[in-house]
Image (cartoon, rainbow, N blue to C red):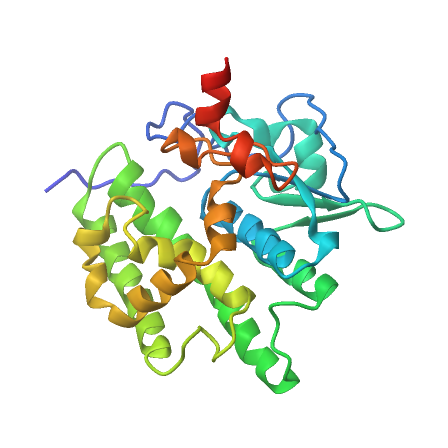
Length: 289
């Protein structure tokens, strides 16, 4: 039994609070330094990192391009959150919440900023008329699952993932609390997918892209080294769905973009053209040095 923590009357910030992300967590918003964002040649400029939230958008863009939507061509710039890039003045101008991903659309009369991954998915889907239900009666179901992901993932990432994988000390109560919730969410998905090929029916939509980036990758053993701990293989419908989406070529490309970790051959830290996947992955860049 650990000592019980008694909260103070007024909480104060102690910067040396430990944990993997202690250096970038703070209770105030705004920029910490001046830094302009790069702007490439395409109308869509993405500033991101290949975390689950970042992967949502790069998968979406690659899926749009695979469908032939030329207006979805984009430049992707790496925002290394471990280095605090998200607190640069240029990035804060695009996303005052200082979280990746953030997107600028320069095809509009006045450049349009979009932040929050779910908002970006919906913006791109509506802009290109893709990965949305063609039947308007099915749209509310798809949107419900999209917003389910946006509301649920913080319990998986900031809750389970933090206390299980990143917290400086392991405590039973928060790990048990958020493990229970993570497994409940997996059960929600498993029951839904028992009668549906994709999340909201027979069509692959932005709800699948959003949910797969978190829960699909969890089911495939890619998050927090927790697959065995959570017994993800027991959620057979989720695993089936996760594998089907994982096999899509656009998904495989999208996972690589703005990736700065893992095998060098999977890292395309910046993406400006389709042939970058063949010529500018990190293993090829380092071999050419």
